[in-house]
Image (cartoon, rainbow, N blue to C red; front, side):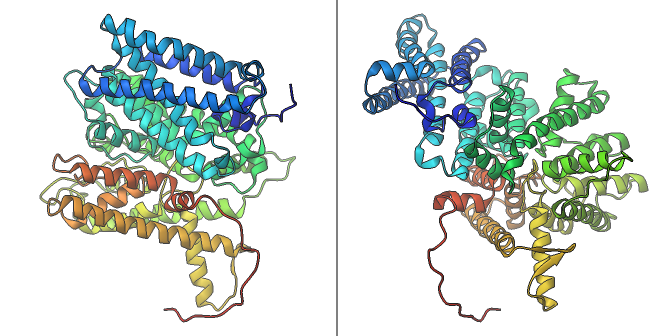
Length: 592
């Protein structure tokens, strides 16, 4: 048997490595366990709703997945010297296919005759999901394009979550029904940590369905690539260069050498913060049917900046509760700072409190993020309070006015929880001027490498510094004794341009699909909320008047906003590309 190169563990786990032909400790075993357990669990908890559409989908999935397995393995077999060598080198995959080829016809015939066609549907769903995920990430062409893997992984998780919410009866509360489009919208909103809803999560879904939504929020907040790396590191394996490149793209990191350490720290820090937040929330949800689950759900949703709650009024019932608001704002703020900044703050604090060690200084990135976040929070609270002083804040005490203004300022930059009503009539809700101001905060969003979306705080800072340098007649952008590279400024300008174009096209599409059903201002607000992954709504998303086309447009905007329009543009273009081999002469053009 020929010597084959050592596999990248993350690529092994995700199925993106040509080294799939080699023996692997973790990758095939984890995949095998996952896709053996998944159909059993799904079938155990209710199977699928039996109707003609589902049965047709099951048949398509069964035959499609079986054909895909058979054709791929025939193609793979042609590249090996002998079938025996082929099966010896891929025992996990061979075992999986063997079980699949035996179980699928048995489930489709024997169990079908007994009236348990859900078993066949469950298995076919597992196989189809497996094939779809591998189809996205397995191609050797995509192994050097981390953004393609990132986009594809998010898409597969969203579709998988939508299928669980739509096809598993136990996902829905008694007497509730849901269309696939609403399930897809909900799964996208949760995975992209947005918070817009076409159906109420608390009343439409059962505890099982709410747990699915919670899992999607956690996956979307941490990132699928981050989760994959954590699973690899937990087995004691090392992360290869390809895996570090994928994680660097997902976390927006330049230094790939720090990825492995950062991911381990991210998980520890995330669960500690979410756990503390859940304990702090617990007394406030003591009256719920399951207080612990409610506390955990809202803590995870707040830290991941998702804004999805189990109550239709969001946090309006706690608008005057100081301790509740402080905990919620702290979770949102920490989740929106970015994991690199959080880790740097911990190192800085640790070094500062030890007298025998020199304190760690914050990097320029962390200083810009903290400064921009503070200015946006304080400035946003002051402006919102001034605009709504005689609006939705009227009749409240001075302390509650301050608390409500601060909460909206923090939450508007991608979290989406609210302590005021955005849809109340007769001037009791948030006014038009305040909504217009919140558009700015929603577009700016959180910071790079965080659980939130938006154009990011540093993008705004870099552009402001570039404008200041232009007005000051300086050739370079300088701040804090450092010079910002030109490629960073180009990226910032490209991000703003892509957001503007995507938002323009999204609003235009909504105007086409909705006609005169909604006001232009309401559609603009909803579109900005979607692309900024905020979740604030003025009633468009939850309205029965919203067309299917409008739901699709908002779904696309949420997906684009979470990954970033620039990422999608580069994904469409096939990656970063190579620089041209020659440089052309420079010539100036007139602008402005």
